[in-house]
Image (cartoon, rainbow, N blue to C red; front, top):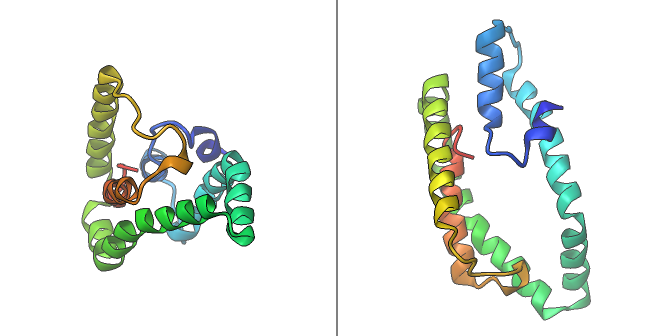
Amino acid sequence: MVEGITEFLPISSTLHILLIKHLTDLQVDQPKLLLVCIQFSAILAVLWYFLPKIKWLLSGVVKGNLVARKVLLALCVAFFPLALIGFLFGTTLQNSLLNVYSISLALILGGILIIVVELKKPAPLVKNFEQITYQDALKIGLMQILALIPGAS
């Protein structure tokens, strides 16, 4: 429940789990199962929020809408860098960075970055997702690689 409520805030779900485990001395037999259960509500929240866009995208692709197909291809371009780096180095990153200290540091640095960006208030380059270019999608995908760092997502 906590995860679903805080999904749209810059709060790390991985840090939630580690802090709860650390502060309560919670013994978890299957930590990956706990992680999946906790993040399931976050996935549902995101799906619910984007449901109209997902419906538009899927029906548009099926009906041959060129804009919908372009957006789907851009999503694939954005996904590729994260998938590739995650496949190649995901386990190494998780094993070396999955601790309270590195996650807290990632959360603090991420918070500072959010504050700096908010203070600068750069003008959006893309007003809606239908305008995204493949180059923008690739940039988004490259930045998503940071999400592999526990606490940075």
